[in-house]
Amino acid sequence: MPVLVASDLDRTLIYSAAALALTMPDARAPRLLCVEVHESKPLSYMTETAARLLTDLGDAAVFVPTTTRTRKQYQRINLPGPEPTYAICANGGHLMVDGVSDPDWHAQVTARLADQCAPLAEVQEHLLRAADPVWVRKHRVADDLFAYLVVERELLDEDWVKELAVWAENRGWTVSLQGRKIYAVPKPLTKSAAMREVARRTGADLTLAAGDSLLDTDLLLAADQGWRPGHGELADTGFAAPSIRVLPDRGVLAGERILREFLGAVRGAGAGAGPQPGA
Image (cartoon, rainbow, N blue to C red):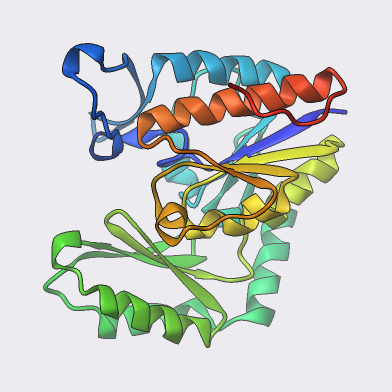
């Protein structure tokens, strides 16, 4: 049976320049590979070693990039290794199959959202009215599924984010602060549901996952084994569970470590030993 590896991308496997956390002397910094260009400028990176590990992982398992990014944002990433057959975009709102969104899956998701939470228009209107223009730079709607704000983090009122989270909770939505973005996402819109669908289609009997943010919580808990880095929302809150390994690594080197862990678990499963964390 194949092993399915569903991994978050931003600040888990790939990193912006601001998130690299290169704390070592310059001469000892790892060589980096640019994996995303936006508006003719390099945007996201992984180490060259991580690139080799991801190539090996793509050959050994069903690797599924799993992201809150929209389809358009995901498609500008150029990951090393075999082209993934499946990818999960828009936090589970789109299940990409050979680069195309599966219409049946998307229809199921939108029907579930209509039944189980407040409409996007209500949340969007609240964000437009309540957010302070002093620190808001952009209002965005992602694939007509959820909303987010781009903010000046140093000017942001953290108490406002907490108040927004309470307001959203009462309407079946969740709030996540990631870098310069505040996401408002419907609770029924989950990465885990899409991961389970890919597992069903591929016949995978072992699922592995990694992520760093609140929006990755359901994915990590749904997998047979999960990993989280030493940075991000989940690290800040001390999130842990028996099936989740907490790594001390931070920044781009955490992405490299996560890929080593994935490969160790996949190879352990292939040897009939069950998931074994790598070195």
